[in-house]
Image 1: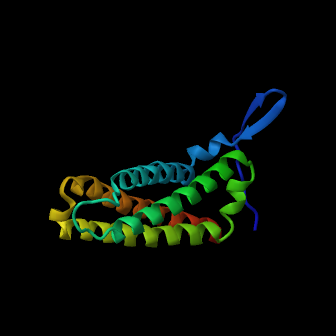
Image 2: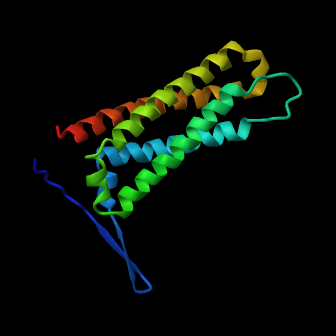
Image 3: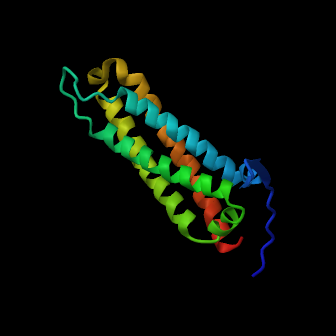
Amino acid sequence: MSHTVTITRTTVSTSGTSVFVNTGYLCTLPGVLKLAQLVLGACCVGVVGYYLDHNRGYYHDEKPELFFLLVAVSFLIGTFCLLLSCVLSLSTSSMISKTNYELIYHGLAFILYLCAGLTLLIEVNHEKSSYRNEYDPYLAAAVMGLVLSGLYLISTFLANRHYRGI
């Protein structure tokens, strides 16, 4: 099975050393999706991390927020590593899409973001009164999590197509 690979690269030279940057990857659909997942994931981590408070004066179980934060941080780090490796290496973006790693990674991210987003959304709506001023930020984080699960679902389909060579 033969594949045609087009690589666009930019050479950045500093102090006599050359760094190759695969800027063309960011113009592809998987590159744009990974960049969007990275930005939206950072927003989720920022919102939930900022509003997570362990010293509340009232009783509130923070398990949904912690689960959401755990999922968001985990996949933020993983997506950052994937995007960075695809941008800094000329062959990674074409080679990794032919393995089942991206298929498994994006499928797992879809499932866990869907679970975490739904859990946080249901908890926030069920316990509106106990969230007080933090209702809107947590609701926004849950919606962003559901959007992220959709982005990871699209990435899963793309990874499946690349893995099967379609």
